[in-house]
Image 1 (spheres, one colour):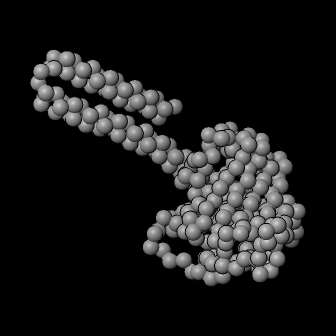
Image 2 (image 1 turned 90 degrees about the vertical axis):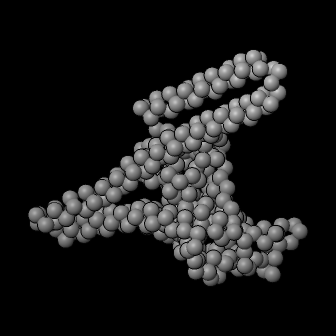
Image 3 (image 1 turned 60 degrees about the vertical axis):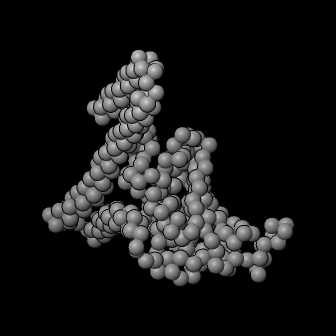
Length: 308
């Protein structure tokens, strides 16, 4: 609330300065119509003042928004790190101080392993976000099979959330489709997309994956969920670093605001693009990753896929 008041104050202050500068300049011009040289210099000086004020306001608003996003990230990170650590400590103390059956002890071990995986995933996500900003970082390229990549990423998410196999429905994928890229980085892309779909699926978790080879040497991987959806005015912001959609539903979800930023960064480094579509709240979301292929099946004029 305090930051919002600060933003409003500086915006109003900037507008008042602009109005004052305009009034001052117009008055000066009216008093000096015959002094052409001074008039031209005054106009140039006036334009410089207005430009500086506008740039200052833009910079100020951006800085306030960036600070708000970073504060939200720090709060989310604190929660993401503190919660599993507190849980692991609690179960360790229980195992240490109480006489438990083997079945109960194994159950506690499984919970602690799950919490440690969550903790490790959070740390890896932050490190991954840092690595994506390193322009000089080298990728380890190899030929990556799309079918194997998607299935392995889905397996990771099923294990992380203890999901039934049919929760992530993967359509038939031609085994000959492959891309040239860093397998670990590309696995992170789809693991993040699946993770995002699970977290924002609401009561009914359902993810559909479809892969379609395009005639121009590209492959599209569509990840569709039945989740809370994205409003039209938020779609252009979801890939920004630290950004989380500001509503009641997303505020209750765990996350750092880095997942989709990492997705876009990695896909861009591989020469691809990522798109997002949603019809709004409650309508689900479809993410499409488009990558250049190294091996692609022959596509006939009728759209049928056959081995080339």
